[in-house]
Amino acid sequence: MNRLTKIVALCFVLTLVASPAFAQNDTIAEKAGQEGFSLHFLGGAFSAGLIILGASYGISKIGSCAVESIARQPEAAGSVQTAMIVSAALIEGATFFGLLVCLLSLYS
Image 1 (cartoon, rainbow, N blue to C red):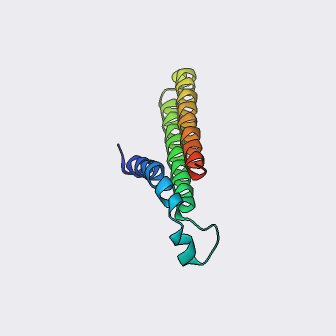
Image 2: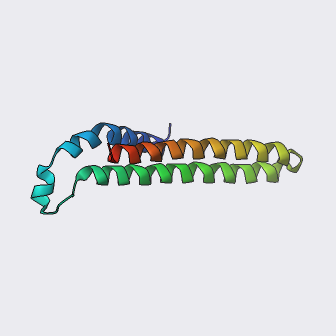
Image 3: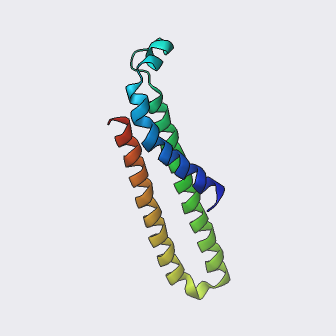
């Protein structure tokens, strides 16, 4: 696993673990002097942003490698394009799942 994947996975796990703990901690809001301020919103937003960055990096890597391979072997363009679309769809599905978990952890 590369470094970005590890960071995204770590933030995903931290969001799941830390959000309920921060939701119970009302003293942070009192210290900040703002009503409704809580760090679990920041954790969810940070994790959602990293999930989007990881997905965009993965899809861009798929696209660049597909263009390279089509340039090397133009006759294999159909199969490369099909594999590229399937891979991008799987990444999009995992991204939507990650974003859904981030949003659900904010409001649980």
